[in-house]
Amino acid sequence: MLNLSTAGAGLGLPKVLVSACLLGQPVRYDGGHQLAHHPVLARWLAQGQAVAICPEVAGGLPTPRPPAEITTGGSGASVLAGRAQVHDSAGNDVTDAFARGARLALQLAQKHGIRVAVLKDFSPSCGSSHIYDGHFAGRKVAGDGVTSALLRDAGIVVFGEHQWDAAAQALQALQAVACAAGKD
Image (tube, rainbow, N blue to C red; front, side, top):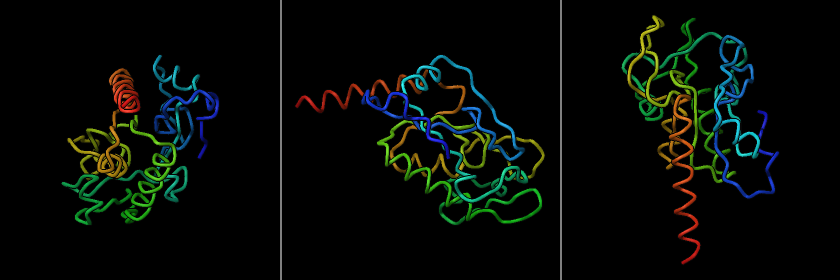
């Protein structure tokens, strides 16, 4: 996975985990991307703060691949607890790849000391507030993806791709707390 965190490497600025598809990388299930255009993201990229991850690709799934959804009534937390599965539209159980990708995303975040993530909503991996309902009918329900759930469990604050300003504010607040703690 391309790591876009090198441009400002010497600045000591905190890193932010970002879904690779939002950075224009063609890693979505359909081989496309969802390139985001926002001043906050542009600043993070210019300062070398964005660290890219596609948990599905990191977990071993190909691009393109059949779309996948968490089984009916499930969420990322229920997948991690073994109470739900992730299936693709062909009926294949891809739960292991999603769980593996989530673990690798967490390892990457921990390696970089990341405490804030901006991920692609509605994804069975990255959905931060809504996912598809498991019927492959395009219906969205409240819930989080497997990676979002694991990151949150580890104390990382997760935002969706329409929450750039809120993510920047959270990052700034975490920096202020860290600076204050360092002065004690």
